[in-house]
Image (cartoon, rainbow, N blue to C red; front, side, top):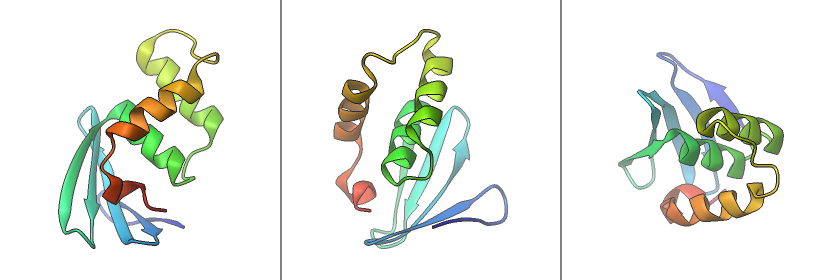
Length: 95
């Protein structure tokens, strides 16, 4: 469940506790309450993580990645998601 807080900060509940995040420059800053750590992700990696937690759907993810890259990716969206999920710290992936 996604909850908007002050200062464009969002709260997302996972089985591993609460994740807080907000847009920071050209990417995202995530804070894991359980791990007590900050994680800084680029824009596309942040979108993939939000898609993993079902905060945004596949169509939104594809549209955002295509806007960032400037070309269509419909043929390779699943490969792109797998690639970026491998880059994300496992602490953030547990849903």
